[in-house]
Amino acid sequence: MSSLFPAVAAGSDRTALRFRAREGEGEGALTYGGLRAAAGALAARLAGAERVAVWATPTPETAVAVVAALLAGVAAVPLNPRTGERELTHVVTDSAPALVLAGPDDVLPAPLAHLPRVDVPAGVPAQGPPVPLPEEPEPRAPALVVYTSGTTGPPKGAVLSRRAVSATLDALADAWAWTADDVVVHALPLFHVHGLVLGVLGPLRRGGAVCHLGAFSTGGVARELAGGGTVLFGVPTMYHRLADALDGDPELVKALAGARLLVSGSAALPLHDHERITARTGRRVIERYGMTETLMNTSVRVDGEPRPGSVGLPLPGVGLRLVEEDGSEITAYDGESVGEIQVRGPNLFTAYLNRPDATAAAFDGDWFRTGDMAVRDADGSVRIVGRKATDLIKSGGYKIGAGEIENALLEHPGVREAAVTGEPDQDLGERVVAWVVPADPHSPPGEEELADHVAAQLAPHKRPRAVRYLEALPRNDMGKIMKRALGV
Image (cartoon, helix red, strand yellow):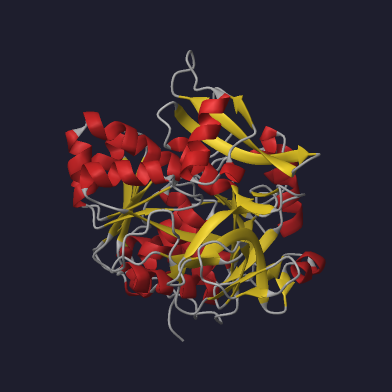
């Protein structure tokens, strides 16, 4: 049975992990040989456990802990260090880990006090004979239990199998020409799929390296890409800041221009930021689409046509369809017919932990109901228009996706940030509401001006019927706009 991490099992002097703290505070690094030794020794201590919690700080200790759990055949439950006590108590009670893995200097909160603690060594164990690694578990064995954001109730633990992890990473390797020569640079949290599965386990499966910045900064990105990084992973907020910095930072321009691949995920990257980055660097940003329960479903291919605003084609092995509210399939690839995305394939989660009712409700046969709304273009590529619950607006008999209106608003020079929601309207059913952060708070663009701007670019029925001005949009750890905090 093939190993999930062949390069870890083999060990070598190649760099596997490099974690910056904050700029100027040094770094922690491990070779594949060092990672094998550290994770192998820890794996031996985890034998027999069903699940272990990992205090998922952006440090090498987190990476070692998760790799050790996977080597031992034990499911890792990454914990967000910024989670409040009530939610953390729910996650720990629900997942019932046998122990918690943490860095030696980590201070753990009260909800973890009852768990046995194992400190993850910061360095490599003293030299000696290599610790034999456990046998590779079955592909369907649980690898991770990752908790959803809990926007519609308590967070649910999505059980992700080893097969799901390997399938999604191998499919991305095909789409992105991802190899052992790549060095992935990012500053993503390690308690989500994006930062942990793609950003750490992805490079390790390929036999390449990951350089984690510790905290995002445009200077850190420029330094690491100029110093050998080949791939950048980020969320739209990060790319927006990079785009803002390009005009005054020739070194950043040069670093981004020299990268092999720029990838954005976790939310839609506004077209305006796509255009600014490409105009200054000559590089395009590739988008992909996935979620906790499905890992990755689609991506723009590195060898494909540039497609700003698209999340590309279904990845190898992934089935994808759009369905109407009555469950009937939409077969038109016309770029206009909006439906809910349903997917199936080896990348899907196994179940919600302890929630057979929620698991059953999430599926239509073997198709997973994502709750995301999209259209398909003539070549089959997918464009997300938003979440069914918050981004699909039914106004005057039309189905309107919030995303395209947001992109139109962001092209107005007076708009810095924008979000679009729907609210009840006696005449229209729902009306389009724009939430705008003006570029100049002292001179915001007028409501009628913005409505006319959108109508001229899209269609009259898509214009905002109300505009509300904010100092900033509410966002979560991954940079996603929290529309429920806007009163949706």
